[in-house]
Length: 227
Image (cartoon, rainbow, N blue to C red; front, side):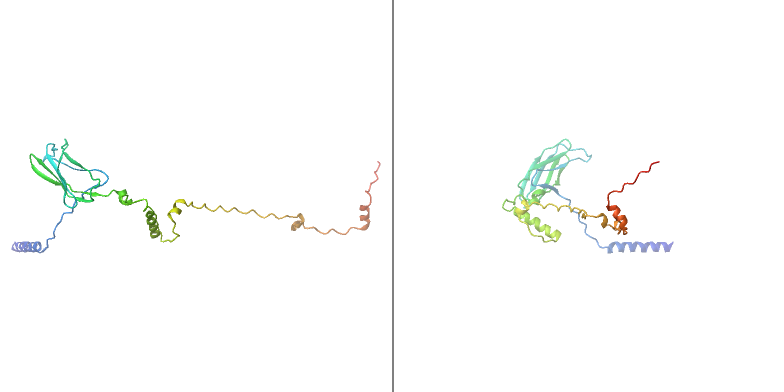
């Protein structure tokens, strides 16, 4: 029994030593992603408000305060209208506003107290506008698009074909595919019957002159036989 008690005592000391020797690492919370708004459409910033029993609070006094990316006041304690489902929101016009992070918060006063929620948001450039840079693109600089596309093609393909001009790109008609080659017909040669090996003329045997003279005389008329 004394041995077991002794081992338990040393085990407690060992665990305590490990606890104090293990270094403490700082723990940091990862920042949440802010609401994304574009500069081409209005942005709605809002929050649902519930009490401890998860019942919507529809009679709170809520305001929104926001600051520009440089820290100056953008929206100063704007009143948020309540709704029956506990939703409080504000419609922010983003057109023409600077791009960046807008530090914002919604603060509400209820019968239970006062609270504030972080509602920071960012205003970014619209995707189409960001790609084509409509604000900076002019008719005189339209030719740069051809140059940019051409440069991208050379980077991707690694080829260096002759560089076309803008006029060539708009007016050049792609060449027609070459015609399908036709199979030539077999040549026709005049064929003589006697030129073939199987029809080769064989020299006729000599004919006796007596028979030949009869053949050259008037036609032979045989005498009919009377029975």
